[in-house]
Length: 278
Image (cartoon, rainbow, N blue to C red; front, side):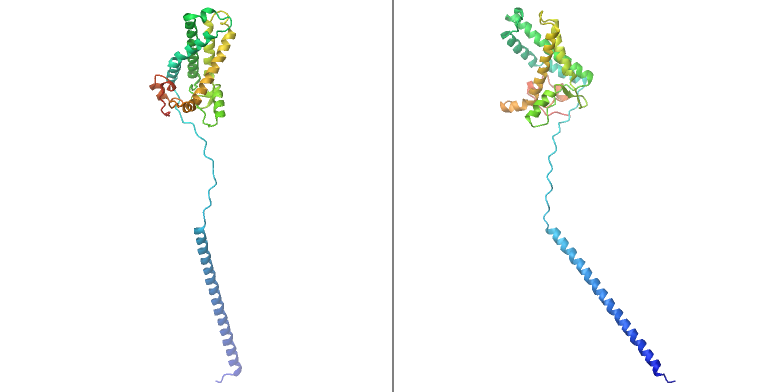
């Protein structure tokens, strides 16, 4: 059956449209593939460049931070027995026999007004003065240690951790009024007040008339409190004094419990200064 020309024309048009559509699809697919390959190459190149830059970069210095403040060494609190041992060291160590002799000699050289001659003339006067200051010193430490044991106060001196001389000076003075408890916290120095009062008022039992009243006892208690402050200053600056005068090494660290039990005399006199043990 012969095919009409119009039908052939429709078949040819259909084939031409299919060919054009297929060619366009293939071209679009090739373009997408090229774009995808290009993007992937660009990403790979950027990653390589970033890695190379990071490997060549110079690290920035870390910001400086101040050193942490020094920390005082941890010292184990003393038992009641160790406190009394420390008090015995202070009350009956060599310094407790030497210092009253020096003070008695200075009073004999310049006695107070209206002071009886029996208290500053000859060997008997020296003996009275020596006994007076030795008794006062013993009462100071007895009152200090007994009070420290009752109120759980640490009778040792803890030096300042500062390197500033003014700060260390005021620390030693303030430590006379506010020291540490057995737990390591700040507390009112009741032991120093009690010891100063004990040493001042005990003299009312034997001082000559006119010097055995409350007013004189209060004056002596004030002097005793100043003595405690002076001892704190000596403890604080003893290492500096040792270096200044080229003496043996002195430590201003508090004695540990083991040192107190082992030694017969205070460390500053005996010359043994091991590092404090916790």
